[in-house]
Structures are given as structure tokens and as C-alpha cells.
Amino acid sequence: IDDQAAAGDGPDKPSVGATALLVAGLAQRRDQTGDARYDDLLERMGRFLVGQVEPSGAVSARYDIATRAPVAGAYSIYYTGEVYWALVHLQRLFPDGPWSEAVERVAAYVAGPRDEAEDMGHVRDHWAAYGMSETNASGDAAHDRRLTANQIEYARHQAEISGTTVRWLSQEAGPWGLVVRGRSELRGGGYGTIGEALTRLWRSARAEPDLADLRDSLGSRVLCLAAMTLDHQADNDDAAGAPHPARITGAWFKGGETRMDDQQHALSALLQSIDIVEGTTPAAPTRGDHERPTRWLWLVALVCALNPARTAGAVRRRDAGGRASRAVGWGVGGAVVAVLGAAFVAGPLLDGLDVSNPAFRVSAGALGALAGIVGLVRRRPAADQGTEPSSVAAGLRIAATIASASVLGLTIGAAADRGVALVVVALVISAALTLAAAAPRPGAVTSTVLQLAERATAAVLMVASVLLIVAGVMAV
Image 1 (cartoon, rainbow, N blue to C red):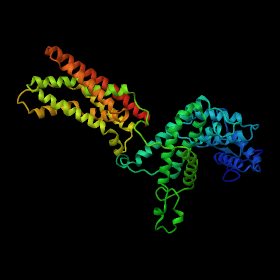
Image 2: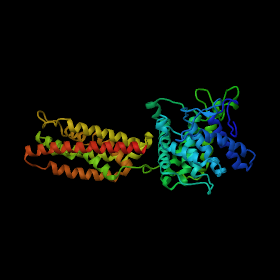
Image 3: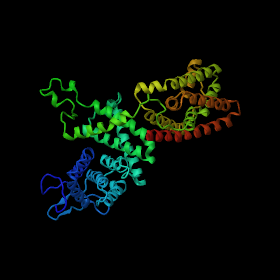
Image 4: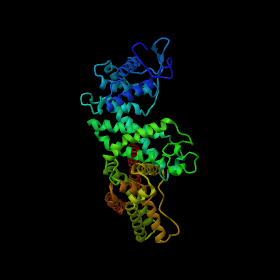
């Protein structure tokens, strides 16, 4: 095409995406071999790609041979990132060529208005991740430069998308995944493109100070995804009994079918994971590895869930009904044992269930929020009348009031996140407040104050629980 060149299905069907990937491939070949025989072809294809870049930075996905011009308004979910990556290669290899301005426009467009302008939603773009890592982490000191503020924000957003996807897939592969989500089968290309995005983002994070805080998290996601990718690769057992086992072993299948890009993307991601795996010494997972809510938030949530005003009211109602103090002792003692027991088994319990801290935090927060709503709207029972139950039965009622499902759920979450000591502190504070509230005072005044305090505590519990849910979602 004049002084340009393009790859495609024929002389009248140039493909923008194929041309971009051929440029990237030949550029990498040149890096590895030092062979410059295709330099002229690279520059001609580069000029074709530059011509596809619109003033806004958008990349036209089609070229009209008849008019010798890009087709306006035709865009692709893949081609923009592919062209970005290809042009950055050319910018590095041939710094005097006409690439720099086009690279800047495409980079700004991808990190800025692209997703909204092309109505793409929150798309996971591994090609853009390739482009960013080639910009700041190619290893060529004369070429590499810092990412812009918009690119840093975009890289973080891409890390969130890919990281959340890995979390979802890993939980789906766990013992509860089949129960709550059913079985879904990802293509090898699916594992591969996620892995390519993560490995390239990891390289950018290693080179970019403003992304350094993401490096460990990205590395852990890469390790997790690499293990899942290998687990889904067909092995000798899968090929046993097949007419041609060699055609099965090593491939990635979905529904009995495999495609070329299943192998290409999966292998690309695994190969790029090697130096991340070799450079990482995974520590034994601990419950402190996640971003956790503050101790104060957990403490407030626990004390409010225990609701000293409600407990004091229950104790006073037992006294009003003629119960002996022994019932109160049974109830409080049993509740403390239940709460401390939940705290001590929190870590092993979540490990055994294969539930992460953030995921359980969301569940505990939901229980707490529900308990807060119920505490706001329910009517307070009157003092017991009639036949007096045994001390054990009365004590069980008090224990159930204190060690409710929401309290036990929040206890497990707090202990898993912040340790048993925090739960003990919450129990001590709650006990002190309960004793103070249950002290003998004029009945009518105390009853009204306790009702108001109980509802106010329920409102605070609801707010604290919602914050725990948000913290859990943000940490997933």
C-alpha cells in the first residue's frame, strides 16, 4: 500500500490487528537475534498502523482498499491495545520514526476515554498491559520512561479487574464453588489472557514507583493463576484411551475442543510467569496477609453486636420475673464460652472451609447489618410472667441473647483478622457496660433509657457492619 505494508487474508483484506501483532513479533525477533533484515518491512507496517490512529487516539479497525483510507467509526475491542503495543516497539527500535506522537495519542486514549467512548464497559485489556510494560519496563534505559498519572490509574484499574477475576476463579475451584456457582469451564485462552495482563502489569509495577504497592499482590495472583492454568492442561491421564494421545496431552480443552489461541495465550502467560515464580518465595499464607479493617472498627462492631443495653435489659427482665441470679450466671458464662470458642477456632475454621478473610468479612458484616436492622425495629419483650422455668432454661435464653449468630459471625471475623485478644477486650468492655446498665435504679427511667441505648447501639452496629462489608469487597 504505497510506502506502507499490512498483513491480512489477501491483498484486498488488510488486517489492522494482524499487522500490529506481526510488528510486535518481528520486533521481538529482532531483539533476540539482532537480525535487521525485516527493518524496512517493520517501518512500512508501522506507517500503516500510524495511519489508522485517529486524532483522538482511537484506532480504526478497518482499512478500505478502494479509498485507501481507514474506515471511520469501526473499532475493535482488541486492536487498539495491539496497535499501542506495536507502536511502542517501533518507538524503541526506531526512535527517529513517526511513532512517538501516535503512541502518545493511543496511550492517552486507552487510559482515558476509550472504554466509555467505545461503550466497552470495564474491559480487561491484556494488550494495553503489554503496551504499558513495553513503555516503562522494556529494559532499554534510553527508551523506558515513567507512566503518566492517567496510565497509573488505568493500570490500577486493570489490576483490580484481573485480580478480582483470579479471586473468582480460585474460589470457584474450591470446595464451595460448585455448590454456589455451578461448574463453568474457562478456555486456555481465557487463563492465558488474564495471565498475560497480570504478568505485564507486574513488570510495570516493578519499574514504576507509583505502582510498587501492587507488586506483591500481582505476584500472588500470577502464582495462583499459573497453578490453575497448569491444573486445566490436559495430561497423560486425560489422553489415556484416545486414538491419538499426543494430540491431547499438553493442550487446553473446553467442551472437547481446543483452539490455536488456547495454546498461544496460555503458554505466553506461563512463560512470562517463570521469572515471577523464581523471584518469589511464597510465605505460608496467614490471616494477616489481607488488607484488614482497623481494630477500632472491629471493636465497635463487636461491642455493638453484644449490645450491653440489650443484655442488661434481659438480665433485669429475668430478675423482674423472679429468676435467681444463678440463671444470669449460667447465661453469661455460657455466652462467654461460646464467643471465646468461636474466636479460638476462627483461623482453622476458615482454613478448613477454604474461605478467605475478606469473603467471610462480607458475610459477618451482612449478619451484623441484619442484626442492627432487627434491633432497631423489634419491640422489647416485657418481663417474664407465669411459670418460672429452670435456671438452666433461663440461662440458655440469656446465652442466646448474648451469643447470637451475628455476634459469633463477627467474633470469627474479628479473631481471624485481628486476633483473639481483640475479642477478649470487646467482652471486657461489654461486661463492664452491662454491669453498669443492669445496676438497680428506678424502673421506669432505667427501662426507657435502656430501650433508647439498645436502639442506638443497633444503629451503630448497622453502620459498622456496612463498613465491614465494604472493606471485605474492597479486599477481595
